[in-house]
Length: 218
Image (tube, rainbow, N blue to C red; front, side, top):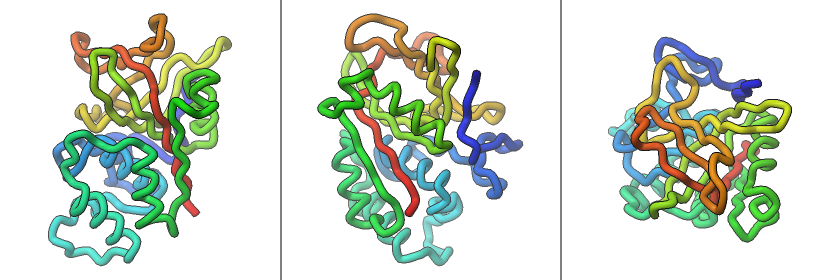
């Protein structure tokens, strides 16, 4: 069984938000300021319909925005743009709450939380996606480094979920697919037991999921 959150659909422009045609969800890293977590955050907020694609692309402030959106963009593009080392999700949560807390509720989890210690966030990820909400994932690479992606669906059978479908700002999107990377679960043993499947068969890193971020609209 394949599950995709129900707010998304495919158009000639790729994965878009229902009732917002010509609003592709995926943002390629480099098209805006900021680190991977900020790109994934902006994709998340577009799906929640608290911001619009044309607002993100409005470099010259020609579109009138709400004060909350202005504060959000100022925080993440003007004050925290081009973050070389990215942001841990608990720090991201603090920034969101400070400038956008009147619009959304944010919950972050890391390796100290029960959700990780139980099964490495697997149950939490499936449960959130089953409510038709995305969930941000922080992934750590076996060879070093970390990244942030946005999970928008999964594949499961009688034995449970075995693939997580994600929008990754680090890769181009495919206009005929909802996702552009797949996290293949439990492909290996040990701490780093998952694998990112990408368009490049020679670049499919081994990872573990180290953080999650759940955002809901108030």
